[in-house]
Length: 153
Image (cartoon, rainbow, N blue to C red; front, side, top):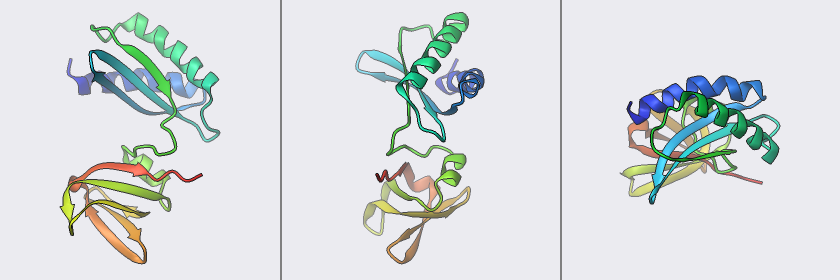
């Protein structure tokens, strides 16, 4: 099974577990760091994410993973909040944070810049529009390597 198929399969099975515990499944990733593999599950909630909430989701997901055993190699399961400087992966995430400041990292420079920061004004399947100072800047989505919420306390 490909990594993408694994993640999609896990999303379908973990999403109802998270929702049953009053959390939104924000993102899943399976990564190798050094010699270790990590299955990272990010959860979110309108009321924030507590350590106890992460523990509840972790226990429930761990039971599921023990039952279905989808990953042959050894790995560590981590459940956490996406954090204040969260990556915005989906259109749903972008929609939620319209009007907020974001950071766009680019694969290659546009106007000699590889990083843009500004207020998320709008987006579509092809581009993201941000307000930088008083100007609207349009960045093609295929040029964007990472979109991050600019956390502000």
